[in-house]
Picture 1 (cartoon, rainbow, N blue to C red):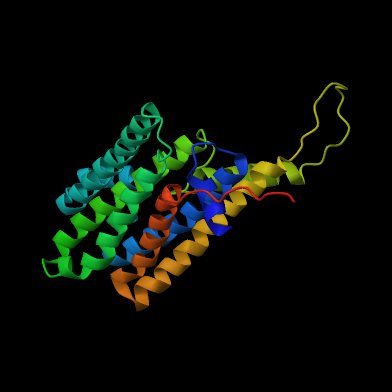
Picture 2 (cartoon, helix red, strand yellow):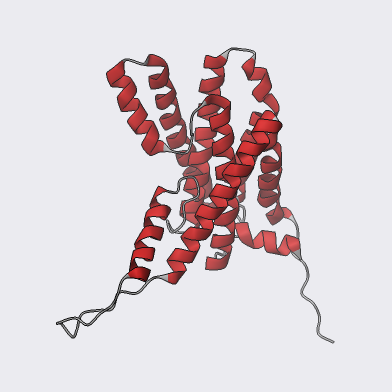
Length: 251
């Protein structure tokens, strides 16, 4: 049943399959959220490497507005990751089956607030919109990235793709490498890691499709385009509360 499948995505008992499927889903949501945030305020809220670089540029150039936005983004991202760690570790010590449900529910509520209240914040001027949007979405990105990091033991990331694109390039290089004869008979063959190449290609592809859908939705619908994302996260966070289907009896 669909509910049984969704339950495996957030269950405490983890498998590689459930980690990958959850990662692909969250990468899509992260891509859509990141693209929507850029169209809203002209800032990518998941890209902390860029934020640190922008912080340095703003500090040197004396751009106080950009400097404040970068500080807000970095503090919010770190706070989101810390909040996620607190929630998951607390749930684990309580032996709760909802250790991954809580971060997803918080993310869903924040994206819902962004979708429903975004137009109201625009009434307070562009500066106010920038700061609250950057803070909210950076917190969400930090929360999500910390959750999937803990779920997959740091194998999967969903809110930024630099490392994954690098690994794709490395594996393609291995694939194209010509293993001609070596003067050293014990020299190992260069072999592509198809598992890693496939996983990172799926994650980058999901993030890219999410970004395109997010940009399209924000362009034509506005802030409300994040409401379906919030609903999807709310469903994922709630399935652990639904009783499992009884096992089928063999007659």
